[in-house]
Length: 475
Ligand SMILES: *Cc1c(COP(=O)(O)O)cnc(C)c1O
Image (cartoon, rainbow, N blue to C red; front, side):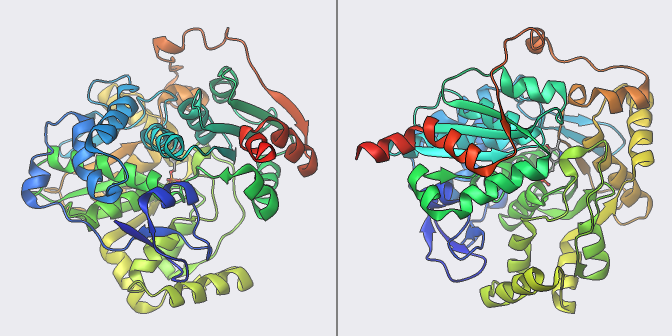
C-alpha cells in the first residue's frame, strides 16, 4: 500500500516511511493512495473474533508487506494484551438501540492507548530492523503524554521527551507520566503554559538541522498509523451490531478530528455507517464549519473535557482532500488561504458532501454535567465528561430525527471517569475510584525535570540525553 500527501506534492511513500515521517514534506498529511475494501463477508466474520485477530484483518491491507503475518500478529497481541478488559473495547447497551463503546481500558485509561500501544511496537520494530534510533518530542495537556510515555517506555530504539506545563495537569495525569522511571523516558515540566510547551516543540521541529541531528519524530494524531489503528473499533462494533445487514451510526467526542476521521476511514473500507456525529464541547469550530461552510478558529475556552479544548483540528485536512476529489492543488489553496486570512470556506459541493457523511452537534458545560447525572441515574454507569459530550450529541440527534429509531447508535467512551473525578463528582455526588492496578499511584516515586520556559535550554537538555544524537556524534 502506498500513501499520498493531501497537498499533492510529496513523493508517494510505503507504510514504513509514513509511520516514521508523521507529516509529509510538502506540509500535507498522508492518506492511502486507494481505499482497501472489506467485503460483506469479511465484515460479518469480525463479529465475535478476539480483538487482535479482528484488528489483523482490518489493518493488514494498510500495512502491506512492512511486517510478516507473524510479526504483525505478535504486535497486535502485545498491544491489546495490555488492556484490562477481556473484550479490549467492550460494547455496553445504555438504551433501546443506544450503545457505549468503552475505549478506556488501556494502561492510561484513555482511548489514546488503542493506537499508541500499537504505534510504539510498530515503530520499535521498524527501527530495530534498520538499526536507527529516533527521538520523540511532544507537548501534552495530559492524555497524549501519559499514553506515549507508557507505550514507549523501555523501547530500545526510541527516547521520549514529553513537555507538560508545571502544575497545570491533573495529579493523576502527572503521576501517570512521572512515575514511569525507565531510562528512555524523560518528563519535562516547563515553567509555563501548555501553549509555551507546544511553542518549544514547534521551534525544535522547525530547526531542521536539530531535527535531523536528533532524528525527531512526532506522535500526535496527524500520524497516519494512529488514525488507522482507531478505524478497527468502528468495524468491530458495527459487525457486533449486525453489519453488513444493518447500518449503524456513531457519536464521537471530537477535538483534533482524528478519532472521527478514523470512522470515515472505516466507512471508506466498507463499514456501513449511516452517519458520524461530530460531537464537540463549547470549542465548536467543527460544528460551526458544518453549519456554515466557514472554517474559522476562535479563542479556546477551558472546559471539563480538556482533551477537546482545541481550535485547529489538524485531521480535518484529510476529509477536505476527499471532499475535493483528491485534488492536492485545491487543498494547497485552502491552506494558503487559512495561513493568510485565518479562515477558509468550503464550496457548496464540498459542504453538501460533508453533510452526507457527518452530523455535528455541540454540548455546553451544563448539558455535559446533566448527561453524566442522567446516565448515572438511569443506568448506574459512571461516565467521564468527554464521553458525556458524545452521549449528549447522540441524544439530541435521536430527538431531532436525524438518526432514526431503527439505527443502532454507538457513542464512543474515550476516558475512564476516574481520570476526571471532579467533574464526575460534581454531577453525581460520587467520586469515581481508580482501578485497583493504580492503587499505589500516589505512593510511587516520581522522575521529572523542571525547566524554565526557554527553547535553547530545553534543546540542550534533550540533545544531551537523546541516544540518537550520540550515535550521530560517534559516526
Ligand atoms: C484526545 C481525546 C479526545 C479527542 O480526540 P481527537 O482525535 O482529538 O478528536 C476525546 N476524548 C479524550 C478523552 C481524549 O483524550
